[in-house]
Length: 242
Figure 1 (tube, one colour):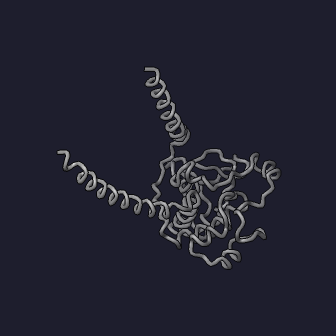
Figure 2 (spheres, rainbow, N blue to C red; figure 1 turned 90 degrees about the horizontal axis):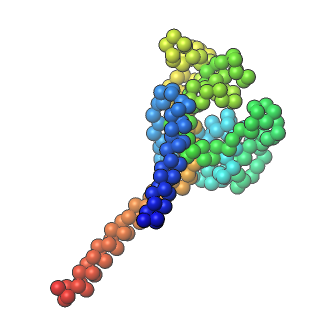
């Protein structure tokens, strides 16, 4: 009986640990989220996502568990080309994708050092990242002039504004509206860019995901074959008993 109570307490604790982040997220964000379906087989999308990350994110947010060389190999990019187009910090192709930003300066500028994003897609979900990157808007009351609908009062500037354009929140319609002609990309092009960037972060969260899934299929097939032979062998052993 004591063992049963211990098991039930452990199970209840596990459930609370799983549901607590979900309830916290729901309580702090009521913005309608757009669906996001990642595609790790879309190499052009992942390659463009890497380029966007290197150009707009890596200056502040590192990927301290991801190497340039591994990324280039997985995404079908020649290492020489990746070294030329992606590595801007003088690092070697085999090094980790760390940021060159000084943490002390980051604390002074933003109040906190920008977080590493290697596992961000696993921590928050790719859907969260996709909607977060699309919902920055002008807010003159914020220190950096921008706010966010998915993460209100975030201490981050809208680094993609010149691509998307000036986006404002219309209080009457309660919608985000981009000023026409203020960005370098159309709405469709910007949505695709954010998809590619989010898709890349989804890949970074578990680079071996596709390999693991392919291996899992072979393992299941092996278990099916092994189970079949085991069943036939077991029946052969016991036929004389019956």
